[in-house]
Figure 1 (spheres, rainbow, N blue to C red):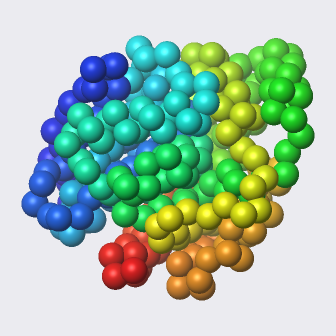
Figure 2: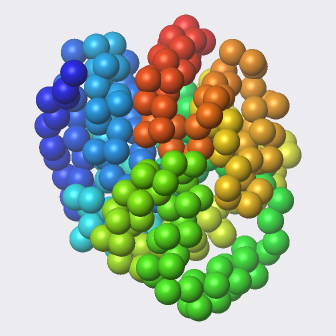
Length: 268
């Protein structure tokens, strides 16, 4: 099954695509670091039978490559709001992958009136992180990036996102098409976007998808497991044998998991 997509741009130059307006319910998709909307088009095509789909490219990625990358999660969430307004989408299920999942969390917090539900896919919970001072963390990250050549960083990052060598190689090749300053913007957003807020929770239903082998990013698995502990069992989908890129490594299992979650969220 293939999707017929209509492309648009916001006034600020962000590229987005919609699958149509046949249904009442929308599913908005935010891809991860160094990706693009095409990463999800094929695997999400079957969901166009039940939901209108909205994809967009993050600033500094894909069709939005000419846009200066956002350096804060809050700003990135505001960009998603601009995309939804331009596409005339009032409310949607927010599916966010990895860094895109952190943006979706920030969006759900800032714009609950535009969020039907939040589906956190392979991402850490930004309000449950125990991190040092963001200024200290940002300085340490900048130091690490300054001494790490871009090609080496791409290879190392690719090894973290997948448990399959063929997927790692393809992801590393794709990563190298991005400018290094995109990495700097993403890492600065991570440093300043995460904080420990024990009393905070979202104002809409929350669900989670994760791979059972997604343990290659330091501290990420424990944080994702902590989010699982706060959700009803029926709203957590763990895909056996998959790493970070569940939708690439186990596409059919990803579709099954997302289908079950959307069915529950539509009735929540």
